[in-house]
Length: 144
Ligand SMILES: [Zn+2]
Image 1 (cartoon, rainbow, N blue to C red):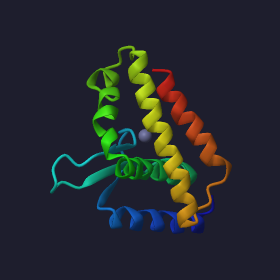
Image 2: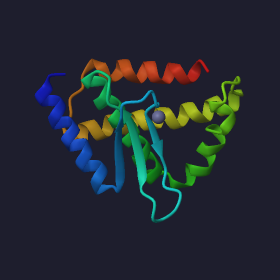
Image 3: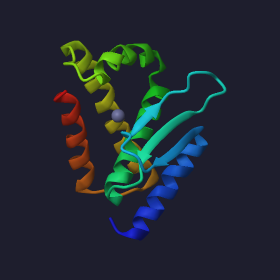
Image 4: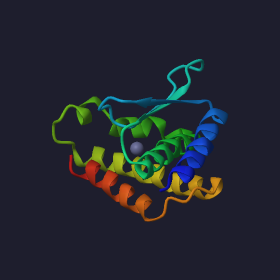
């Protein structure tokens, strides 16, 4: 992804996030990319993305995290169900029970599907890298 396309895509996604009340944080730590739902009405939803990675990955991850936002907007009834997947256990390094893995994979796959829709809607072209990062990301959840 060349620099101009990157800047343009980032601008489009930042403005989409803003319109949807999502705060975007670019971090220089090892923190994983993440989407935090709002916990109270006053608190904004927040997306965290690592600043130090390739341009195409940053855009794909940005798309994906906003995909979670779109999925939650489309399926608010799924919030609690998803939470049963992403429980504390999951991040504690222990083996994840199959049912939790399935829930997480469903939520993650839906976020990638929404991300693809968003890219199309905003006219962002990420090409083959999108499928590459999607596969890699989903595999990382499967292998926990
Ligand atoms: Zn995700």
